[in-house]
Image 1 (cartoon, helix red, strand yellow):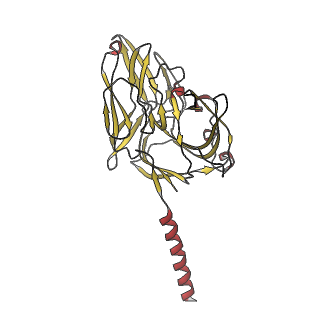
Image 2 (tube, rainbow, N blue to C red):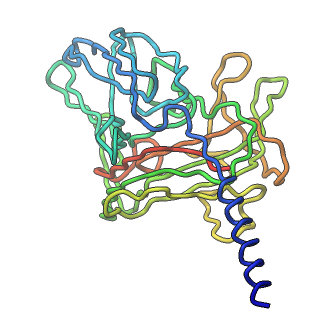
Image 3 (cartoon, rainbow, N blue to C red):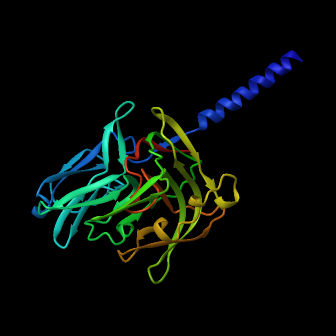
Length: 318
């Protein structure tokens, strides 16, 4: 009997070791944030004519031209290159910073400030963000900032979890600010940082409209500060209708309206909304992956000033 238990224990150990060794990770492109594309953009004289620096995670490169970037690096960010009425302006709230070992990405909710002709002070509030996809440049207005974003990349795999390292400074003051150009208001509320991982099955109709079924979901709100780095933070991806599983929150729902609406470039080269019409089943094929990390979750021009999120090593677990 003693030998029988011994053999059973050995068999379980072998099975456990085999399962552990089968666990694999896929680092998302340039998501160790060790290498960056540095862009130098000269702003118009009416804004001071200064040369500003924009950062993108990607293969090490330096670009000193006022021109749109092709975003072949796979990542779009909240760092903006805008040309409005012929005038060039930038904003930066995503930067590289020293992390646990090498570099990481720092995302901040803060004002983008400038003085027009040295007199009129303009401040626009924005959350720092990085997402798989691209920003359609140059931005030509602020009426619908999400319409400049192409969300997601083609993808057919079925990971079981999203894993990352992060450090957070969440103010939790209970006061939110809405800041657009020269108008600023405050009101009660909270603004957690947000991590969004969505697997979709997309298709396009004859009119160029893009539709999608939600196949997989891993969405998390970071609502408090951390004491240093939190490593190997794992978000299981739930396949099928997320709303019927325990732990569901409204912010995990389908993104088909308001500031949660997602956009993509259709076959005609036009940025259009992604109509996330319905939940897929657990075995619905995957066509696209969306990953987005943001220092705030309240939408454009609204947030809690000072919220800061450091992220590193974004990866998928299989």
